Image 1 (cartoon, rainbow, N blue to C red):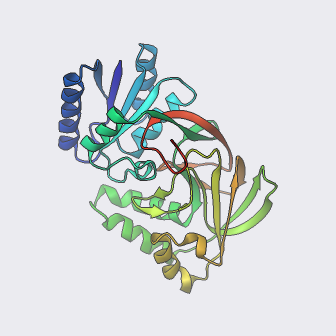
Image 2: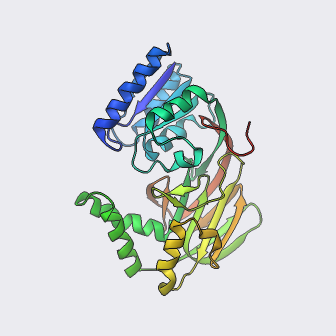
Image 3: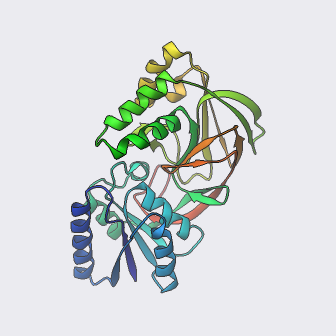
Length: 296
């Protein structure tokens, strides 16, 4: 039994409902028993996925954006039920790493033709995530643009958030400890713990991350002089973060970091926390996706 859990307000609401109906029609043509469940608010996809698995569903299709995917993954991590993704959100960053096509019907083909492959998940203070967590300048941009989105559409709120963050530029004193022996206190512009490569609708924050190697890609960009910041931001957009002289990077199974008054981006949701304890769950998810490098 397959459950399609659809976030009807992801991306274009009208288009998402059409995609959901078309996916259901194709599954029926294939003789695959399924049910369509519409999520009706933030946090509901997780509860609906738990209910579907409890009722005997062996596959849950997440139809929505990165938030819907993260919620459902949080329920399925460590369980036998498999997951598939049909992206209908705006960013769909996690799908870019998993090589799941942005076209919803081609993504459905991935589910129909690719096996469920073991994929890593992470836990931050008890909450599961699948793509990336981080703090610093990028989170400041998101916080500054959030309020603007109530009054503006498109990319304008984000660009104004970048401008505001540049004007009020600050660094963050981050205490860091990892299981591989790293223990330091750094003044950072950006800090990231990643399973996926992409955040923010296309920013390659961790260009070498592999979401099935059992390791986090951890990186930090130490203090950047304000005059150099625009150039570094352009380099970040081009996937050059690991080339910055201010950048350090490593791989780890567990990470603990803290900073006074810290806000952390957890798969696109901004949460306030003084301390973050992060650990990896190797192969905790079974996701229908194309094979990655080194996989059969």
